[in-house]
Length: 299
Image 1: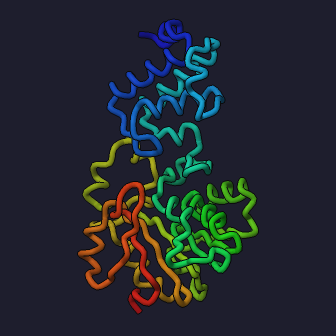
Image 2: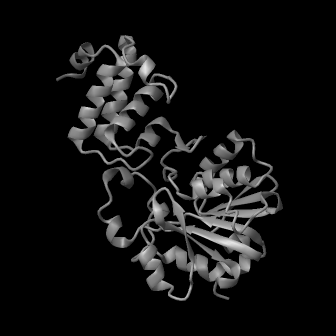
Image 3: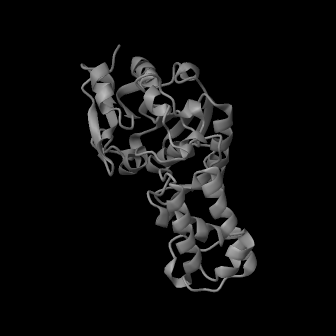
């Protein structure tokens, strides 16, 4: 049915929501960039497009929309289906908890499990947030984790390092949006190469960790993200190996390294049988993120 005829059949958000869910399910979209189902993604895109509060769907369910509003929403729905773009690239925003970040196709869509761990503050190892004065977000991408580090550790200077100049442009926008340009320093660096001599009490990293076999079968939505921000080599650990080999020299005494590896726990344990990392519990389980104290790292 032509788009104009479809638009004439739809009157309110309830109609648009039903239509969007049907379209998304028919198209077999992949949901892994903030939503995990067609309903939530449709609701988000509709509310965002209509400039309505993202947590207030029900009060507006049956509000009659203007023709141009319906056309705008239908345009977004068709973009999501036709281009297989992640919703975050359409709206140019992503959320980690209560925090909103600007994103575009120069960076992966923020979805790190490190966010909830940073919010908890790693208190077993860093009991006093006020005493954390220097931290590093390695492979910062959009800068979202660096910004969360600055919030969790209010006296800390945070270095946010990435190899990609494009990613750092996005990170600069987010850092400026949060008014943190004096506390978050953006550094173009191939892992630690541009940071030699600096010591940190806390290093967090969400590096590229997708293994070679998985890269070949990624859903279309993920193929819009920068390859260098995803691909981690044959077993997904190319960058993790380099990080573990160099991190001890970058950590202060009693410092800690925290690394996200997706579903790579078994690969990590196979590759580093003597490392004895602590696997941290997140809402996704205990297989996503590991922590290593400085003295346990290779010399």
